[in-house]
Image 1 (tube, rainbow, N blue to C red):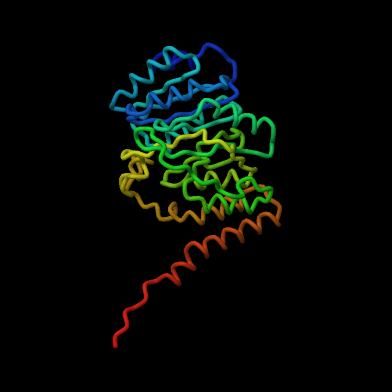
Image 2 (spheres, rainbow, N blue to C red):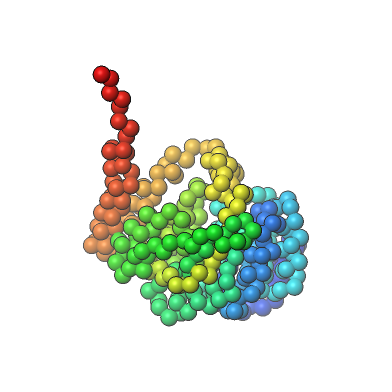
Length: 305
């Protein structure tokens, strides 16, 4: 039945039951400008036991044509085209739901990986079961791929102390680790990508409660910065990008991310000491980052003499 449905939808049909070690999920919408380079960097990986799952959110440019050409030539690629744009959150979660590998990685249609990205990250996860996510150093590039600057390492993500990892994640601005290699079973215990912008930090916070992160001390990931990326969008455009069907609706509770972090700690399988330390770390962070600054950094009133 699955094969018949795939043929009707024009999808790539795999006639083997072999489970790949790694699943790479590439969600895309109108990515014709950079997706060729992104796919080529995946196909150039020295670690070859992977599948590439591409979910096209009903692109209106040449994305479909480009992806179908690659899928027709490479049996490790599965291409799915949606009948409407369901938003980035749905698409990111969809490629994960289709994954068959033991490990999982999200790939963006505008980023590039060095050939030994998968091999180096796999070495870490295979060697150390306490690590739930492996990721390399990141180089930020300009739209043309020219090196711009190197991302800074986030300290204590690899700590043995749960509360230190948790605090490190919620204080991290970039959340680049979400494009690392993760254990699929750990990801299943997370909320994945929620329908609000910035939910990737919550996902990483949930993973930090499950195990350690380990950084590969080599720049193997190139994060492209360009005018069309989501971080350049207005708040209204971001709502449309992440979830067009619910854009404009009230998300007041969803935007109170601190409540979600408290919930993550409460639901995690932690002993009372670790749970308490995580709660205290979160309270300390919120006080230092928001309450304290708002109280003391208010603009002083103009004195009238």
